[in-house]
Image (cartoon, rainbow, N blue to C red):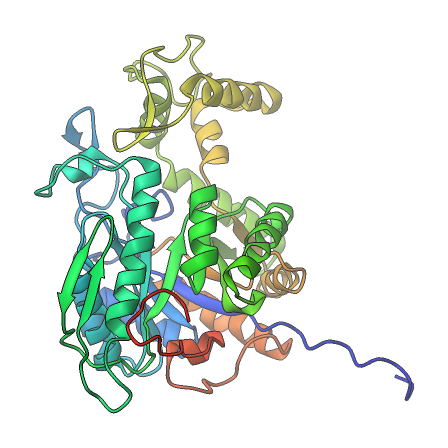
Length: 445
């Protein structure tokens, strides 16, 4: 480089998190190498592996009702999982630096009670708590709660926004010299009066994560979240999402670095590219069994398709015109449009029912040698398709070990991943400042 050459910009650092596998078609829970999904040693193993790999945080999803099909609990997924904040409180005792992120619904909880539990975890863990804010979309789940039913989409996000703002009021309600101050919140969804029982926590506010790609979710994340957990089919879609969400921050007085974008991804490693591709294909076939393929098909067509051969062609009948493609019991897409899209793909590539479901339901995956995966992840981040990744291994609890042993050292060699924790809190790992005190007024300063 000549003396007049411009100094190249520093390479972006990659953020990494570990998702404990659960009820999804990523987990191969029947694999002989898969352990318990509810015993504490499984959670401890994955968390310790993530901390050994210097990850930012450990991520737990949530389920408020067992999944059903045709009125029956089906056994094609993991059945049963414990409450997230309870598990993370136990993990705080067996880890030292790893962030601890819990998914908790803003639809079926109350701000005072949840803010108290999250602030308590932040204290107990020395500043490592995070809250993945989700809304619950269906009466199917609501039947387990006193209020029952569900909220319309717009109301769910209105309630969630007020929920987060109210939690921030509570977290900010103690003075700098450690004295509680009363708050008096009166909003559309919540009324909270009195003093908060927990002093300001080590991070000020636990890290707030938002999951979801909808327009409402993007706007909510831009206004209130520190991290957004999303999914993309590739780098091009990732860059479009990244630019869209980062572009929304300015109208809330925020900078691009104030929100980290981390898609959920899977990975498969091999000693050669061909070996990795072969292994990945085998994993996908185990993730989507013949029974799971028919289940996915019935959720689109809305009728019994059990007589169809999963290795045969897609049905030539149209979906039930009165049916709905639903999440729980809420219509989320036009079944006919989805069926037409699947048929077109099947015809173009000569795919069977099972092969079509495999191709249309997978997550973004990094498949290759450790060198290939490290290089692709680096390129993904350096070209602003993401700030990092939430890794979803297909095996519990040992599925993350190969990544930490083989890919993390290569990311460190490329100078894009830490070689040691520089701070003790999750905010320090993510490069996020501690929120300024607002004097209990809520919202962002």
